[in-house]
Length: 105
Image (cartoon, rainbow, N blue to C red; front, side, top):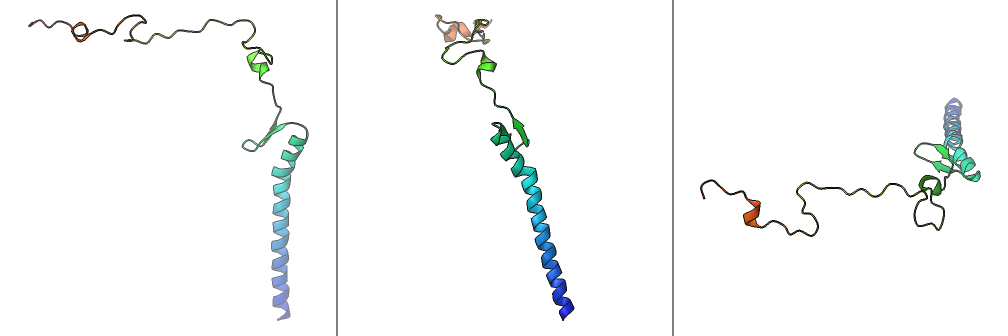
């Protein structure tokens, strides 16, 4: 009977030590890198598990804070032409204009 109790105790000690090692692994892999990244001012990505440096939007747009438009005046906006669309200022064709005349009429 004494030997059975010691085996049960060893199983409990083994389960507790495995749980502690699992928690230590989780802390070292997921929690500590995120805390280190955020303490240095970075942005932590849980999806990719990497630390990113924040970048201000003006680096992409070339527009400083308070300016309404980007510097340098880029190309003019593009006007897209849709096939079959009616140009501005014109009325849509009526029913007699839209159908070609049939040879029998």
